[in-house]
Image (tube, rainbow over the protein chains, first blue to last red):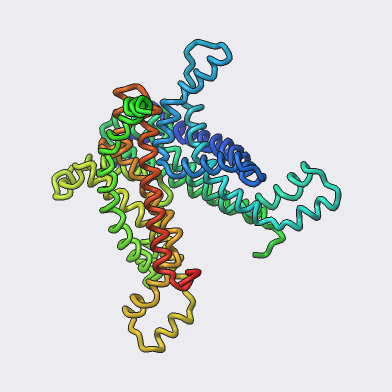
Length: 235
Length: 236
């Protein structure tokens, strides 16, 4: 039933393939988490400046993406992404066929999803900073950049870390959906291996264990970070 | 004006909309079975999780840990492809359910939502003030009556917002069942895409329907919150 001998490293088993696939999952997660945080910061900025148009766009983006299944977003970006990029390139006078590679599409798709969750977390932690702090910084003569980097960011990071940890877990698990685009990460690898070896149970359980390890270890890492960032706050 | 209406009717997105709509009943069927079942089981699991029987509590805790630590897609594949490959399951009565992608989807979604729901309800049960339980005990309530009249109603209404989130996640999760060849909305949109090579139109039609479904779910949860929190209503 469970074929352990198929999981050895080397040519006889799929161990090394799974190791590479795990690294690919981690790579996609980290890249899309980073890009997602960047997008989330822009979204939060669009929501908190007093501008009706940017706020509407940002709200529309978060509501729609969070109300639509992740799989649909991935399909849309995977199948529709090339057409969009090509039409943009046409504006700049480039008429040849462009194909984005799977990793780029995967990263963008997952980042677009994860940014909606991150933006809610970041917005809540931004609003948790009392206004007096920003006023005090202004009274000290700090300019906008210093206020952002020395007053706002450190506190937002501390407030947001537990929430960002949750988003990370969601992002990590969402990367499994990327398997539909053909990028070889854990899920895709387990499907390939089970098709070759006719033993789906072995490789799917392997995939489950690998995901469990990734989520557990990263959960520990975020716990440590939280402790680190809330030094001096004995709560 | 009439020309404009005609152009809408001839547009691909309009035609796709009704094609995708034919998959709505399959999506709703998945939800209609897995959500109520998941709710009841989640309550039972939450009670087991907070019970003083260590073995039961530990078992449920590890179940929740495993399910929440793995993607739903792995669980669906494990049930659909994995269990089907085991010989003694193929020969047992379970095979009648497991050979259908629909029942595999229902089982996987239920297993998934029970883990998340149990954790949510556990939070609700543990946040009940001790004084309320004590006042129930002082009135001579038995264990079952205490549960039915005090603990569960308060716990459930406290966690309604977060359970509502879980319900919306479940609506979105049904799209994954399409990967086991079950033809619900995402599956149909995928098929249209393969036929017409117009991905954007097909998936936007499906996206609108999912948004609508989630909108209904949000309204339903809002209504429940309004109904079960009479003390929080602004004007009676």
